[in-house]
Length: 88
Image (tube, rainbow, N blue to C red):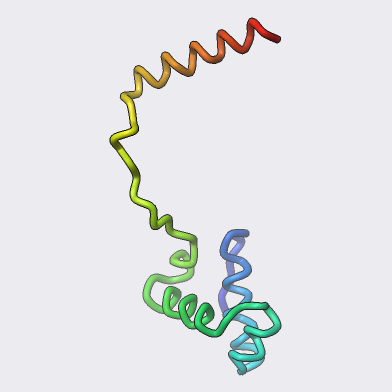
């Protein structure tokens, strides 16, 4: 039985718990509206990395070419705040 207070992974842990409780993966997946492939993917994540592995991992690689240094970013943000405060 998996316990978590994290709302992001509560549904995933609930699916795994329901399958264990019913002793029937197909029925648990049907009740939760999830495919069996998804169930087995969640189960593998828990077996290899624990319950915290159920948190969604971003597959997107960051594009650092579009990033500016922190000083420039703060200057631009400050300019935007000044401009918006004049128009309100």
